Image (cartoon, rainbow, N blue to C red; front, side, top):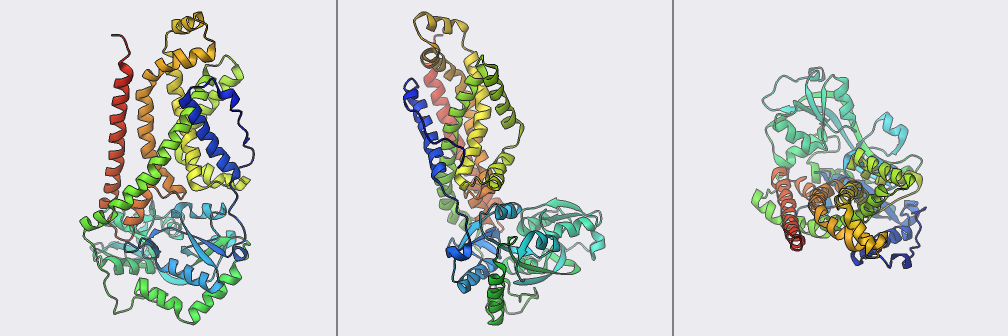
Length: 502
């Protein structure tokens, strides 16, 4: 993490309060860890590891097997088979589809295995392998809707498609209104709910969905008239294509690819359905919820809560420094603090996360997902909490400063002994609200590869299509955490008020 000084003068901290000192030391630990981290980039063919980016919520191509908790699916098995042919260990990195190419360019992994449709635009920007699945573009409608029988009928209709997919462009070219979705399963859910009129995708995805759910409420209303070929995507001039293509040719020749296709799709690689497939077993909704209570709780305990606490503590340290900067009589210091607050409060938190995780690697700064999330959330908390602390300090009567000066306190002593303890009573309620908001904001970390509570719920819902049950369960966990924090806030406010004269 170039450019961050890794030397801290502890002697200058001797006048700080103990809690503040502990917080500063925690910041130092995080920064020192970042300073000592090494990039995990490198040539995959020489390292013995092939890093594969995949969605993990795109059943049956890439999803979490409910029985084993491991990644499974057509693309996952193909990637594993290719890795075996290359003699490389395959490591999967689960990434949301809309940011998967940004993560590829940021060198978070070496190839994408997630039904990447081969298009001239993608071939010009990325190394695209030979196809390992071939389908036909189709328009999927509700079973009782006969108004769409051709691509031309999409004009003026609302179509669900992932914004970065080739199907989104097909929909736009047909004059349809595009409703962005995060994957095929969400698109079909919106179709069944009547929120979109059609879904444009390939026949393979449709047959896979039918195999998984036996859903008779949707049908293929029209064909697009063009093939869709899916392959691996790698960074341009990666040098991986010859090895990948050779491995795929071998898998096609010995029938391995066809066997994997039949296993997951009950269809051959051209997307045509075959008879004789067996229906997968289905769990009841209550059984599904029961099976995922502990995985969701574990994600909350091991990721969501630590991410919240670490980010809030570091954010408070930043906020105190920035608040004092805002109150400084030095115009330069005050304006720098104002500029920082303006940037943080004037830009979305999601954009800040994306800049730190996806953009910084382009200038040589590559951070682990959890560390990137901590930095983004800490900076965000610092910007908002700084104004809370500043207003709390300014709410203390000027006479308190004068009284502290009278009994011999300097500025630092007066701030530590007299002003901050009183300001804390004023700041606790709004700071507690900031903490509760941060708990919910940590769900955004799922977009940068952090498998926290929401991401765990998404993974569990993907192969089952039980979004309400699992997202509702995740919401209950968030609610419980916030209830506990609200109770703690009330107790702390009561404790602080005990010494206030009435």
